[in-house]
Length: 276
Ligand code: HEM
Image (cartoon, rainbow, N blue to C red; front, side):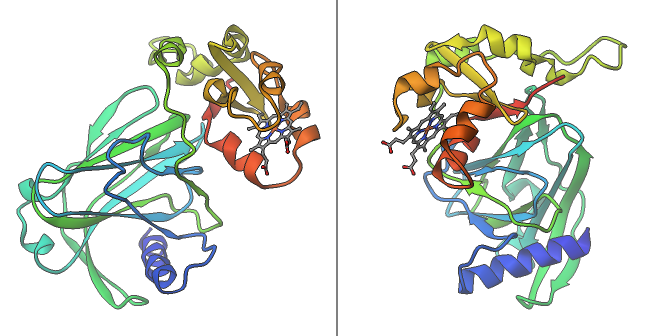
């Protein structure tokens, strides 16, 4: 865990100096990243990223999202650099991090420790303030950070050291109709093991979202909400409409090969892995 974080931060610093396609690139939250949908999306939340958020005063918000799949682990660490003003702030004045799971479960990260560690690559002393690792729900986690004083923090997400992808600006802003059509996943109260919280994203549910008003499709085992993309698709709206409610893997792959814009556009509309 410590080595992973150390590497993430080291790479974060290295990438600041020499921007490159690093697996552990830093993600600096912008002043416009005030809500999860306006902020960046970590396409795979198990891959190690260091998210930087700095604030000039109390009451500011910065936010981002991370997608996870069933069976993944949600690993999050809250850190500050061991220097003033952050290290002299009381816990109650440090930014608050609230994580909302795909099923709407909110967790306010409690500051539980002030554990020092020296990060040798950037030669920086950090303090761990909190570390969590818990089995993930499938879907998109929202992270909202609210400041309570001038401060800067780092949120480390994920612990897998491999190539990661961050999407910005391609996120759909759900229309009221699209929002209304989204399922409200119910935490499973059933003792039957196969009933999981992902039951909202079954093929049966995809088939219900088969129109321009709410257009879901499946590509390679993931469910996407393409409602907002219908009118924007360079290959025409009818190509997308033909996918609504269906498995679009073959049509998508036949038309668009290899990584590139179609693939990253698609990723920005991810809802969750298809539930069996
Ligand atoms: C699954 C959802 C799809 C997504 C996210 C998607 C995304 C995209 C994107 C981003 C481009 C622009 C590529 C570029 O400029 O480099 C594009 C172009 C295109 N797409 Fe799709 N596509 C999808 C499905 C389809 C399907 C099912 C078809 C056909 C049956 C199709 C046909 C085309 C064609 C013909 C173009 C080229 C248009 C042109 O250059 O004028 N797409 N698509």
